Image (cartoon, rainbow, N blue to C red; front, side, top):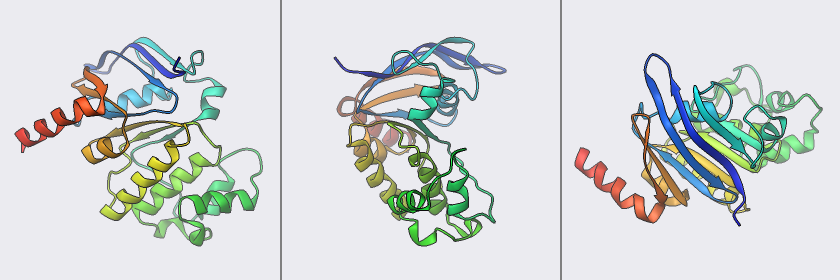
Amino acid sequence: MKSSVLKVENLSKAFASPILKNISFELYKGETVALVGANGAGKSTLLKCLMGLIYPQEGNILFFEKEGPASSLTRERIGFLPELVGFWPEMTPYDILSLCFQKKISKEKIKKTLEEVGLAHRIHGRVGEFSKGMTQRLGLACLLLKNPSFLILDEPMTGLDFKAQEWLRQFLHDWRDKDRTLLISTHSLRDVEYLADRVVVLDQGNLIRIGKKEDILPELYKSREQVS
């Protein structure tokens, strides 16, 4: 049997009006699911609910078959990268990674983590001088420091140039190939094609389609051509 990593049941969230409407889906260990939809579809709101940053009016969220979003076990095993990542500009990657956890982190572990994301040469560089792509790499380094088994990324390609996007896709492709789980919110069909096993499609707060990449990707390309 497949091991459930995330189960969402009948999730609904409203602010002035409904944002998410009765959303249900499940992720399994070792798979990548792409969350796709236009701006305003509810993708970021859904991810914030999953991380316990906001609370739904209805529904259940279960990680690893028994843990809620606020569970310490959930927080230990999951890394979340929001769409906009920001750091104090005067700090260095070494400073930031040193402060990621309450317990002391060795300089060797910090350097190894920065090597993993291609930032070891800027370990003492001023973050205010970093490009968007470098800042994104630093955000990933903060997540990787705790060795998560499940990453949740909200529009990670936003604002990156082509080279930075290609690096990040390859990094995520290699990372998830070690039987890890990835949930990525994206506008990019290239992300879906290169990374995803299954696709969840949201439209105005409704889950309108869920299935294998091979079944859904042709429909997404066709829809994009009709819009353009």
